[in-house]
Length: 366
Image 1 (cartoon, helix red, strand yellow):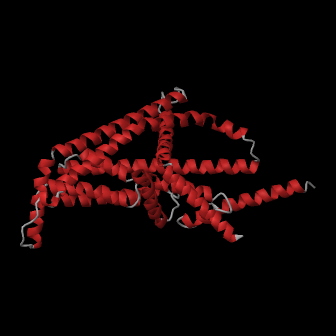
Image 2 (cartoon, rainbow, N blue to C red):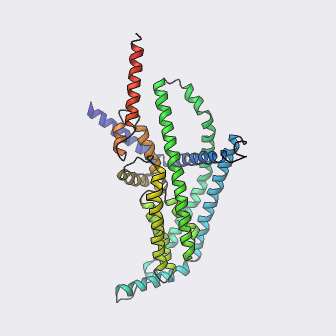
Image 3 (cartoon, helix red, strand yellow):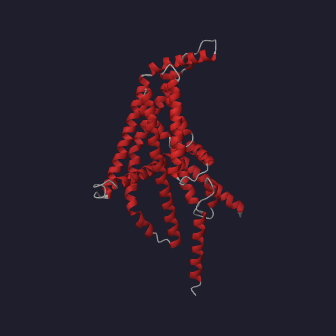
């Protein structure tokens, strides 16, 4: 019987992975829309708390304001990326000779006697332009999908008004209804806390990094600050990558190592302060995920969905842990994925005891 159960689990996991890979073009916009849906509701909640205005406006109006604000923000971000990439391409003739000078300086410091290679020998110019062309193509493709994502978000906002009525119309018994409602509530709470805290801390990290870039006069400081904000949502490797890229530009832009060290040490210090001290205090126990699982799921989702998968790896894993913790058959999975093995076990045991007592009372009314 256990062999059949293991085979069934393996078959189910295989089918789910196949669906995720084959349906990538269909599922990715939906998951991105879900994230934006959470952000729209969080922003709407802030609009509702505005003094003298928020409480007087209908909820539909503040939801529309939130959706328009996020749509305009996405448009501004895409426009900034395109302008930055075009600027890099136009100024490539300025940066490539500086790269040659840095290579020559490195050969002198190390003590290598032979002639340093030129940019043309390394074919860096073609590689840089090719990578920028890929970035432009990616931004163009993403811009085409923004309209579809915003349309999904609009439908989610419409459906959220009628979802409680649909849940009531399903006619679930008290136990299933309670479990389903509790699961949705826990997922909503975890997602809102994670996205809210992560957004605030990412903005703080980006602003402080922007100040550092502005002080040293780094080119495209706003773009690098946005990159730090975005990559801060990617666990582990995101902050490292977002720090390395502007540091490399500082190494090329200036003839000495001081700006490079300022970027590396300054941004790293900001990342440690915000990511390791402030963020855990604000996040609390929301992210009950094993660090090893974070890395493994990051690799898995990056292989399946690329950059989008890396950004969504943590929210998806949090939802999986919460859902698996609700059922006896899948609770071991939630325990293995969690950081400390605590997945509301006490609460679940208490609910099980209450449910057993209710069933016994129904079976024996006397």
